[in-house]
Image (cartoon, rainbow, N blue to C red; front, side):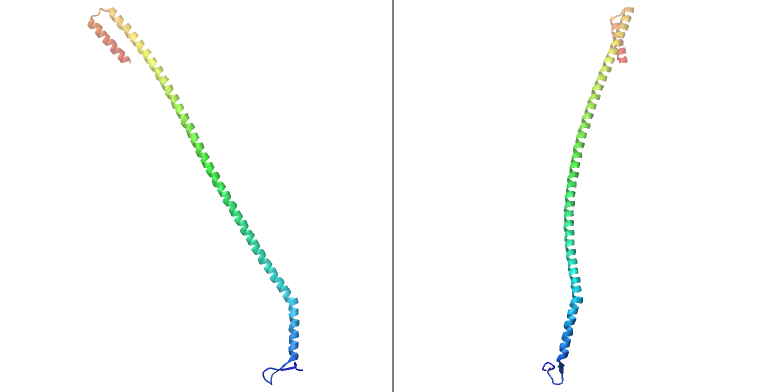
Length: 173
């Protein structure tokens, strides 16, 4: 049995071939047992871990895409809100300008109405004053005529009478 005794370099050390075969057989049996008992579950755990990591990566990518879409939506909404706000401001300015014109026009019309009313009032008062002056002039003329009739007036008296009448007319005005 050549395999029973192998000599390795020196003559006093022998390796038993049977021990090698038994060790090899035990190793193979142990490997088969480990493959069935430990390797399968270990590979299953590794497969689960790989699937978990892949699903997490896929979930993260979906979340990134969703957040990107939300960001774009928010930017779009913000842009629309800015445009709407600008439109509201422009409309408010236009409305303010229209109100300003309406108020200015109404104020001008009121001022014109007040001016015309004041002119009419002045004309009325002027006519009343003229009528009153005419009445005074007539009264003074009658008074002067009655004084003239009462006395014979010389030219100097006539002049004095006219001046007195004019002075009285000036006082009453």
